[in-house]
Image (cartoon, rainbow, N blue to C red; front, top):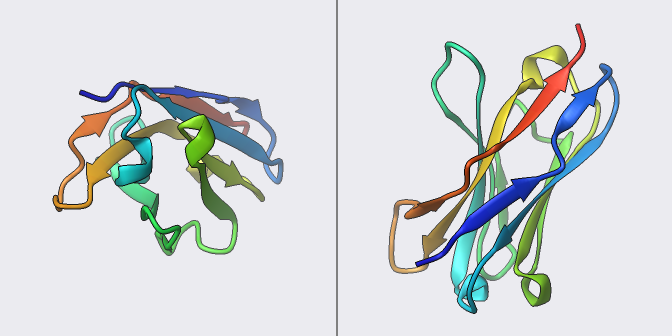
Length: 118
């Protein structure tokens, strides 16, 4: 069982940058691919970015070039660096963990709120 805890959300202005973090419990973090998803009020949850155990990254088109996902296996932490934030980026950002043998994310955090003034 892995527990995930996000932090770093807040209120920013358009064009600002923000980094959200997600720390995982246990000692299996390095064996899990990690992802970031977001959900805005009244909308479905959507994929933002992912990073494999080997560091390969993937991004949604909407954030490509603005967001960067990274991981620190020694710290059991995955990060999402967000730049050039737009009002439409406002959402609850959640991290998720997927084992290498699975195609679905088995563990999810509670999320951290990112608000962008409009």
